[in-house]
Image 1 (cartoon, rainbow, N blue to C red):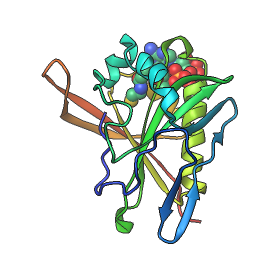
Image 2: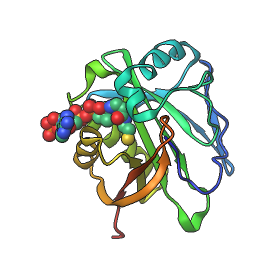
Image 3: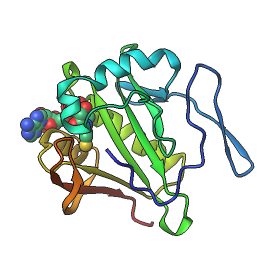
Image 4: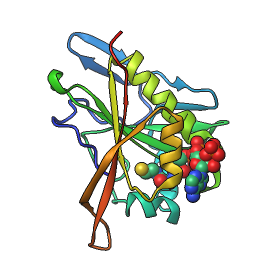
Length: 193
Ligand SMILES: CC(C)(COP(=O)(O)OP(=O)(O)OC[C@H]1O[C@@H](n2cnc3c(N)ncnc32)[C@H](O)[C@@H]1OP(=O)(O)O)[C@@H](O)C(=O)NCCC(=O)NCCS
């Protein structure tokens, strides 16, 4: 899946179990775990690679994300990737990029969960948790995402998390089968005041 932010995220990619800080102007921000109702989000550590790669290879994940690269997670330095944990276990990951042009400020998110956990409300919780973080901590007022119009479970989860359908772009993504597919753009906007 792509992350349609205009400028490259400036943040170094997160790997390893060290304490990670990011420079934001003159502010150093430590990346603490973010707790949702049922899931916890935290930066990816080296130990997460094997379980995440196994999840990423599941047919129901490949169906919507395409095949993974050897270097995934960590093959795209324009996105920040976080592990999703439930009851102490890695159940998936999400990623986001942040538009750094202040006149177009927004964040764009994407998510995957292991198949055995689908349709239990955990994706909705993870999306609510990351959007709250992006809005309350990182100061975004607009969060976007792109998904297949045929991915009914994902669309339902996104709508439960507060996203609305913006529209469908025609034949805008080429699938692994080499054919072009439509994409649904969704957004969650915090109105001023
Ligand atoms: C998309 C994804 C993150 C959603 O997380 P999830 O935990 O499965 O979603 P939730 O349980 O929070 O919500 C799913 C909702 O869709 C419903 N649903 C499930 N299958 C459905 C279908 N075929 N049609 C319509 N609704 C469906 C569920 O019943 C639930 O709604 P409800 O709570 O009102 O009953 C997860 O399924 C996933 O990782 N899928 C594979 C990868 C993927 O598609 N990523 C997104 C790419 S855009």
